[in-house]
Image 1 (cartoon, each protein chain N blue to C red):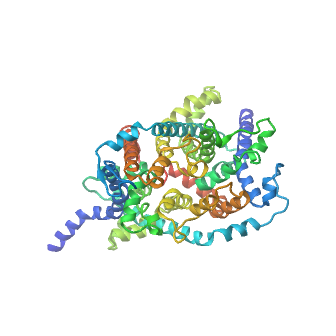
Image 2: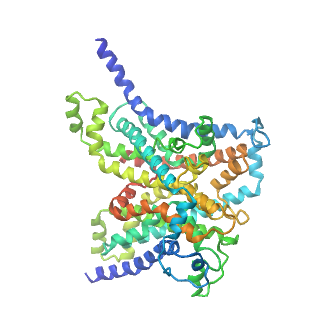
Image 3: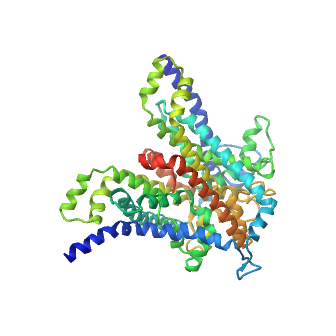
Length: 297
Length: 276
């Protein structure tokens, strides 16, 4: 009797034991850090104050009053949205073309997807070399159309867009693959039916295919917005936020504050603000489509 | 039929030039790595180097301990994947097969991690690693990735698709949960497991920022960080032929594996939708 009782108790605890290892790491390295960042954000803690001193919301006020912070926010929004929109748009367009079962489709897929397999740090170096003025390759190649001597990474007007270009180059193949997966899930009969009704390929795409992809597209969009907010490799290697902070993105800014100036108070304040924003994204996802993804799965 | 052919022509007209543009940086990388420094700095540009010499590769290997970096990277990637497989299979089994209080809430709790990747919380994680006295260790690089919400999600779906009868046959033979996972679930979920492994390996082979933060000695440094430091060593413009040779040394294994197993890789990433 005692045996069955113990085993019944074990059956109750068992699921939690199975979750424990994953949960442990999740807690220590994802949840605990969020609380710790919020806690430290209320302290003065930097090279000038090696011992933490409580100073309320002063860090937040300092951050919000800093012009560079707002520039960083603007840069990050410009970078994230343009990288994602351009690579999603191009990715969808390319996916539709590859999906026509053209001969040699495998070669195209490899040519479009391979940048995903290159570390951001390495991609940044290759493009840094291409952007070198005068003897760099872009200057040579564009000389043909009279575009020699563009300032590329040296001008506040162009530098961020140069990094956007690398971001698009690196991710477009990934989006293409994701959209291919989406296209494969659309039943062919719908497209055939529309064809029989006499709809042209343009109409069929926008009236049949695209609406069927839309919730899928939204999901990819949110996940990757969150993902691109985190980009730092390109900035770290290519510009270090220069010139004049025109390429400084939020995670690089956090890195600068925390590990260049060793101002952990401000670093934690920025981390808390970013995390709160990401958690809002989480809520948006779960209250819209996350639930469906969960229950349909 | 006629319209179909016209379609395919349009596809080629789009795909061929775009693909060529996409490959330009790769071709340039290779061509520069074999050039001499005067060739690189020259005002005249040629796609092909005058002679294909390996000097730059030899020099790169001499300037930085890439052998050591290779070993470190392989250890970290294998360590992360091995621990991940254990943690995600156990959790995925619980979510897919066991009934317990709070299951849905806990699952959502897991999914949140998808959106809070380690880059955004490096500052507090750095403090944790530092107070555990683990700075400059390979374990520090791996620790933060040991639980993968993406992996749990993927494996849970795979486990759910496995018919109950398969599991029951093992249970009748007296096997418990662990036996069932090892002998029934993992073998049957192999495609998902391979997909997860490929995404995990690619992601961690290419990782840069977190390893940069927690390591500053050769002992634990990874390939990507070593590569970045190589160019940052000189304040003036880097020696491009050398840098490109080093870049090839770093990216070659993963890129070649991708080209050889392209179908598998692309399928794996198709599954992913979410990274990690």
